[in-house]
Length: 282
Image 1 (tube, one colour):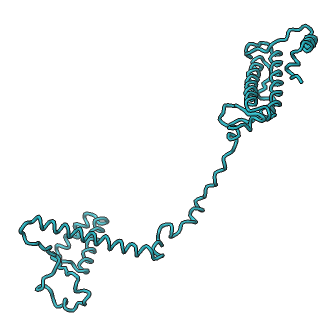
Image 2 (cartoon, rainbow, N blue to C red):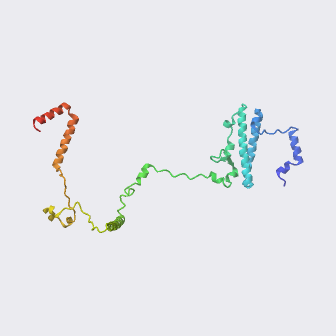
Image 3 (tube, rainbow, N blue to C red):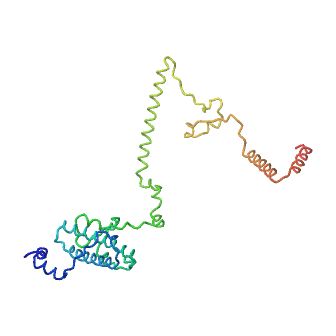
């Protein structure tokens, strides 16, 4: 069977079309909406564009047209939508109604617009094309954020590491590492000491003098009463007079009195107090 386009090109179809037009010349829609200065014709071209859009939207619902034909139809529909917008603006300039505000939105609801794509819409089977379907897939919603009270519920002593040693694993490891570090430090000290002695030539080995050690003649009888655990402890001697607890308390009391006198007593009262102390010989 012949296609519809071929049927329309037959002589009978052209003759029938001429009879319907009755000798009238078919007017062509202007390429630019600004070229039309007649409000009635502008309304006519807008209706014509809406009719073309409706036909193409019905055609694009057929997914068997093929990917390339569907993409072409979708582009044509978007082009007609933009052209319809231009005619609506021109109609408003010519004093007609504002279709952008009061016009039906049915054509807009049939298409789906990709966010951030400057108004380009996809109709019918075009929404299922490869690469387009992924554009409409919504990302999964982000998990709700926990409040401060919910976060504080999970914070306990373990969070701060206060009970890390309760399992009995960490302490032995630390003790073993501590012994190893001490041995390494001792070995390093011995090596450094031998190096210093070798660099000294014929000098005798210098023993480190313990400045805090107490000589035998300065020790008193109390040292003989010390236990075996205290024998290895070092003794210290104070070379400056150390005040007793009573002397410290008296000094603090005198200092506090002076601060109170300086804070609350007047200069006259201070002078009288000094005179009284001098007369009394204090």
